[in-house]
Image (cartoon, rainbow, N blue to C red):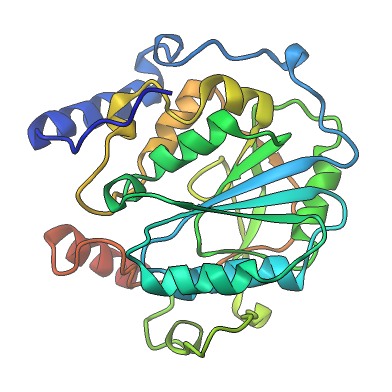
Length: 298
C-alpha cells in the first residue's frame, strides 16, 4: 500500500481522473495494469466449515445508523463463523466515539471489536480505510459495508453456510431487505435515546433483488483482498478529501476484479434507506440535488 497522499489540490484534474476510471470500468481499458497480480481461483483457499469474516464500516456523524448495525451483532451474534468488526471513525465525532465505547464493553462469543480512528480527511474517502483493511486482513472473507446496514437474525450464519467451499473473488447477497426512503421525521431516525442497544422494526422492510456487488454489499475473498487491496494502485481513490465523498470507486473495484460478483442466498441483510444523508456538505449544490432525487424516488 502506498502512503496516502495529501489533499488533492487540483479539482479539474480530479474530475478528469474520475471520468477516466468510470469509462475504464465500462470495459474500455484492461484492469491488469491498475492492480497487483490477483490469485486465480485454484490458488485461493476454499471457504472452511467455520470461516472467519471481517466486516468494515465507516462512520462520520452517523452514529444513529451505526447504533442499529452494532446492536445487531450483540443481539444476533454469529454461531457458525468468527467475525471481526472494523469501524473507521474520526475522534472529533464525539457521538460515534461514545457509541463505540459503549458497544466495546459487550463481550460476545465469536466477535472481536476493532475500532480504527482516522484523520477526517482520510475517513471522508471510504476506499482509503477499505484498502488498509483489505491488505492486512487475516480473515477468510472481508465484507465492505456501510453503517446503515443491519445484520439481523441469522444473517451471518447464513453467509457461513453459503460460502462453504467457495473460492469466488467477490460475492454479494442476491436479495436484501430495505425500508422505503425515510424522512428525518421517521421514528427510526428521529428517536435517539441514551446509549442502548437498538432493534429495528422488521415490518418496515421489504425484499429487493440485487444484481451486483455494489455499495455496502461487497464481500471479497481474503486471499484476493490481501493481494490487491481495494483500489490500492489507483491514486485518486487513495487521496484524502476535504469532505465526505460519494463512493464511485466500487464500480472501479469490480472492474479490477473482472467480475460483478457471485450472488448468494443470505437472509436478513437489512438496509435503512433515508432521504437526508447528513454526511455530505450541507447546503451545497450536490447535497440539494441528492435530497431532491431521493424525495422523487420516495
